[in-house]
Image 1 (cartoon, rainbow, N blue to C red):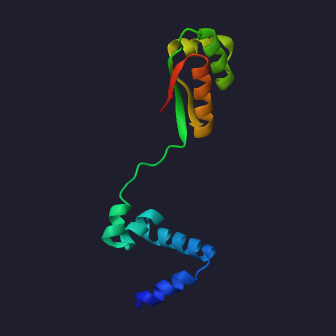
Image 2 (cartoon, rainbow, N blue to C red):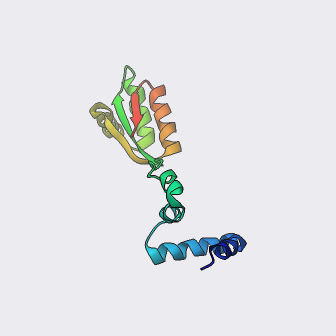
Image 3 (cartoon, rainbow, N blue to C red):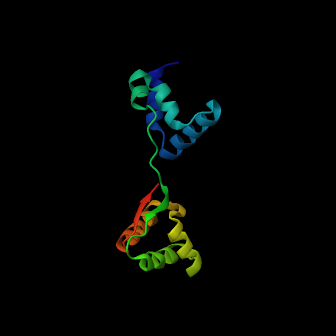
Length: 124
């Protein structure tokens, strides 16, 4: 196999053709594109492609403390969760996870609302 010729053929491929090629390789060898690049790229590329922590896209909103404005925090929890008054009060008093698997942007907005109401909360 002439590697230089193969590289030239890959360069000539369209984006759609490359995408199909990568999918075919993934299916044939049972690997992901990231793993295929690390294996095919030699030792330098393998070192660079070392396992990296995947960026989280969904978070749990955890209430640590409701602070001095418990009523305000209950209102925010009701707004975020759709719970009734009694259930929202119970959730606030028990502390812990208020909402699970929330997209990053929504989780950050919810965290800001809770902090604005006087609560101490975090994303996990």
